[in-house]
Image 1 (cartoon, rainbow, N blue to C red):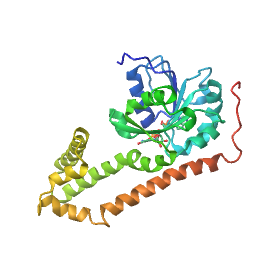
Image 2: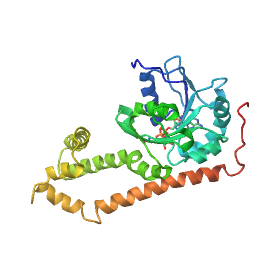
Image 3: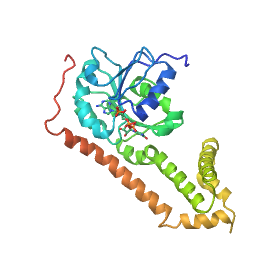
Image 4: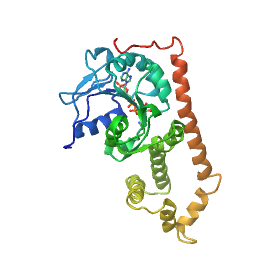
Length: 291
Ligand SMILES: NC(=O)c1ccc[n+]([C@@H]2O[C@H](COP(=O)([O-])OP(=O)(O)OC[C@H]3O[C@@H](n4cnc5c(N)ncnc54)[C@H](OP(=O)(O)O)[C@@H]3O)[C@@H](O)[C@H]2O)c1
């Protein structure tokens, strides 16, 4: 248990995989009485509460609202959240892929302090990396104010990287937000190839997983460039060199990775447009702080 000041009261909207990975980190850090919302059941230690919907919130006024529903749910959830955010003046941190801060602010009634963040699933073991972006109005000092609070909350997931421009969120999401899926796909493919080449399934599984986690550990613990670590495995005219000659053909991995990142970044950018269209009619009502 941390000895630092407890985290402020939070409202987590969307207590799924990512939301709960963060919530568990905050619990360990010490958290003022907070609420997590999701339709399905959830056990939380007192004094924290689970609610099935925002309609049950009553008089609870959080200091921070963390939005971790799927982006496709944003058009439903944000109008319900608007009066809560407006009346509490809470800082809003959204981890929804693609939804930009201007769209968030608009959907929440305007004049809201919004931070956009993008953690990744190694957050579940505190070894993730979160991208974060705050519009200029929230100041540029990461040591105090909203940015410092967001850094502390996101630190439950691992490293926090602040981006200067919101446009950088889309390509950065394609690397670190989506990235674990690329690595897990590699594990699947290595395991399948091992089985196809006659290795027993449990050995194939162990070799694929341990090779990836061990290589990740090397990247984590050594400051050596990835290219140098790769060269250290690659003897001239050796076994690895033959494999890399296949993978590194321009039309193989270099082209595939480039096309994948491009597709993911474009999809991230599209999600904000989809939210704008979903909210277009009727346009969200502007809510005053007294409501
Ligand atoms: N997973 C990742 O790697 C990752 C990485 C970075 C960012 N994100 C972002 O994190 C967000 C959540 O992703 P996830 O993977 O955690 O998805 P998830 O596991 O499906 O979590 C979404 C949660 O939202 C809940 N929910 C649905 N409708 C709701 C409503 N009206 N009010 C409150 N809660 C509601 C769902 O409840 P039920 O369980 O009851 O259906 C579920 O618990 C997404 O926006 C995604 O872009 C995810």
